[in-house]
Image (cartoon, rainbow, N blue to C red; front, side, top):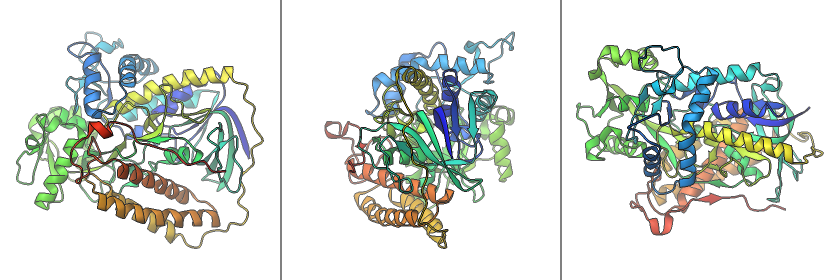
Length: 546
């Protein structure tokens, strides 16, 4: 089955939805999402969107905070562009109907951005976090998705998981992509989870906006969908990827056997929450002058160190001193969720541990979201734009997604108008010679092993020995998956396994290459930063296959 459209968008988070709404004015849009459309990393984002609204804050301060967090690897031009475009993108969300928290005003019905209630998070020197209670992502996702579903030029395909991109030189044998690095993208093969059939999506412009890769790790704040699909597909098609060694571990996920993926927002520390040990002693002053408001990499390593020293299973985050009314008003969702697991954050500290949260690397793009494959754009966490450098500043991710989806949409519309694109003769999916699997244990076993080896060997603290062990094992696993993929009919679980294996291997390669400690990458054998040799990005690209 072939489906043609002007634009193909893979992913339904803030980046994909905003891009869809903008390009739909110029052409037809197919939006593919692997589960239901609202299931995205955006939907789970609690804290908010960093943006400058009035004094004492300024663009210069936000720029400097971002550069400081990025530890020498940010692209300053990108940082300036994203920061300065922030207020316009926030106002656009407000015009679409997003309800951000506001300070008291004489007339709260007037949508005046200058009256936004601005929070503060780690690494920020001023209050600049625009938020909707503690469920910002959910509110943004709700509004954008409603607009998308009402648009007559946008067709949403839920429960469809992309397999691989199609380039102009693709030669088919069950999706085998052979690239010349002079290709242009013309769509993707997509697996329909409801019918177990593969559809061929043909498009003039393709956008990858599949989110992050947290499920590469055993412990993560990410939802189950975050399997690095876009990064893996882009790399397999020949796109350059960059800086995948920089994986951000959020310092504070709730420690409870049933609290899967439950993140305790950075905003809790921003509003006065303190990290304490099992004896009630604060400890962050030993690690950074900013104490509990230090950047995430510092806080995550500090917690990791404290746990290794004490042998305890968690530290604790305490905001009970702020009072019950404040906590219930400022963090209603966190308060309710914590109660479900038996914790009352108005009167007791919450047990917390670090967990994989955000990947600062991805498919390398220019300032319009374009990759080095023609007609292929990448936006959001799937991309490496140069904004985050070696460590993302809190709440800059949704900001980046908004700004880049806007820039990419205008560039893509221009590309559509000026190109003379014609759909090439694309082969349909060929699964001849494959059989239904009778060895599903391979999928579940390798899924578990990848995530454990990444957590143990390529986690918050690394070493050459651990990385070498991870490399040896991942190569064996990747080969096993490759053989299995060609012999058996595909399933969604197999596709996700294949993707986390690809991304895991890329993370390991990047981490082994960088012989220093910088930002989110900490190697105990190279504990210092080395600007002379390593103040540069790490790039990987699949070699030419002919």
